Structure formats: C-alpha cells, structure tokens
Image 1 (tube, rainbow, N blue to C red):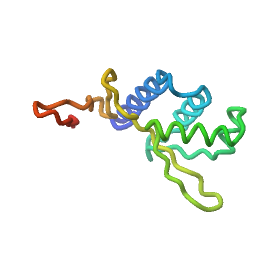
Image 2 (image 1 turned 120 degrees about the horizontal axis):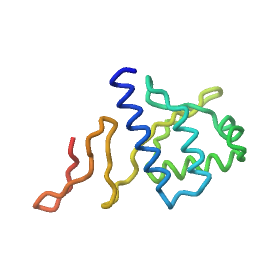
Image 3 (image 1 turned 90 degrees about the horizontal axis):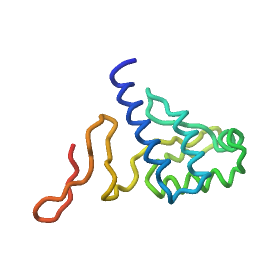
Image 4 (image 1 turned 180 degrees about the horizontal axis):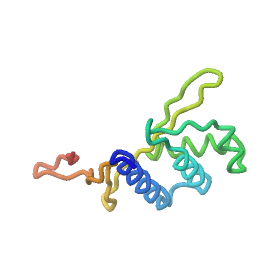
Length: 127
C-alpha cells in the first residue's frame, strides 16, 4: 500500500468515527454513510453508487436514501457532485462537517485542522 493510500484510509476511518458519533443524524443516514465509506475509491477520492443501488443494498426506499444523503450533505459530512443525465450517477466525497469546539478535526494527512483563535478573536485553520 502506498503512502497516499495509507493516508487516504486513515482519513476515511477517522471520518467514519466522527460520523457515527453525530447524534443529530438519523439511523438511515448513518447506514448510508457506512455504505458510501465502503465504496470510497482511493484513486479518485470519491464514491459513485447509484441511489437505486444504495436503496437495494440497505433495504431502504429510494426517497429515504435521498433524504439521508441530503442530511449528510447539510451536516457537512459529504459533498455531492450532482451529475445530470441518464446513467450519470452522483459522486460523493467525504468531508469533515462543521467543526464544533469539542471536536478534534483531522485532515487526511493526519494533521489537525481545528480552527484556532488568534488574539484578535479571528479563527484560522492550521494547514
């Protein structure tokens, strides 16, 4: 496994740990997040399962999958690239949500990206 893949997998596992601890998410959104996590492609950095595939795999109605994806997106856990047209499924990238003061956010490189307050009260993100 290359260093890039190791870094990607580390970040992917950290992401899943944060998502499952988000008590504001309904159970269906947690299940959809796990399926997207399973289908994340290290080379491209996103997953592209169809809504019908997700619904079939999880035994959910397609509208429940759509609501779950919208919830994950609204909470900042995924970004969705909507690709219009027949046989052009959406692409899903994992993200680290809206940071809260009690959460340690870690980027895919393993470095902390938690916002830090400077003396003048502005927030900066360590890069």
